[in-house]
Length: 274
Image (cartoon, rainbow, N blue to C red; front, side, top):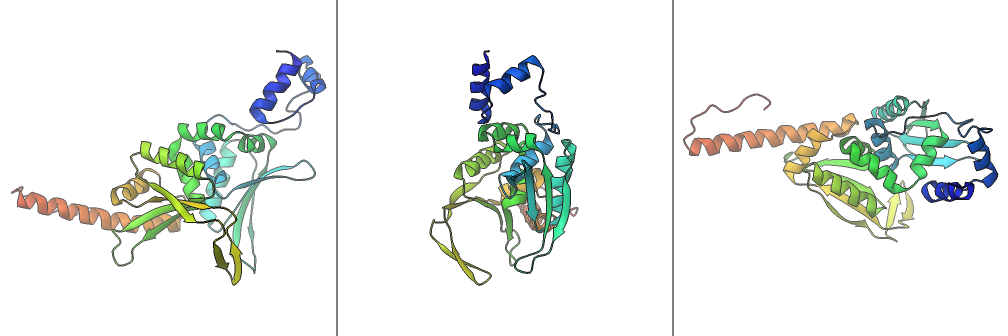
């Protein structure tokens, strides 16, 4: 390819403009493309899929004035922050962690890493992120639901439960829905909050600037499958799923026992796991 064609290809794939002179120096070997960039492993992996899921949820990226390319996650749950940190380290990054006390809002754990290569990947075309997610759908979905997900279990009847996640980008939720279906998990998407809806947060009134969408897993068999195939890295959310699973399988075992008794099966009721 000519130098101009190389420039055009870089712009088309990465949305980055480089000068013709820079491309010339690359090709002649007088300039190292990754001179000041710490390399990380961006080959599809469970860790990268988890990071992609978390990024499409709570994690953020930013470029500071001194050419620092930062990926950051701020969350309430320490186990979530630790899992995000482990994933970054597995890719070869050097994350920093800490705890932030804030009187105006809940205290939070934070994890951040400065890495231009990972920054450019996450800021790149969404299709490239989805490619990684398709390779490792369970890890991707765990990262996304760790970020955006909530679990609701009926206190009066713990057999009733739902796993939901909110996002302003419906395309992301549609992609999640497709990956859940591949795993045999049914879900639905609907408009949770319409643009302009007012909300009161810590005594302050705000309004939604965009439509907020929700993906919901509410069929009992699908909630059970989500718990077993994907689950959460966050212990408090996983504990709610455990309560649901206990009630769900207890009820299922009882139904199986009664149906076999009616059919003359004559077997003892199951006791393990109840």
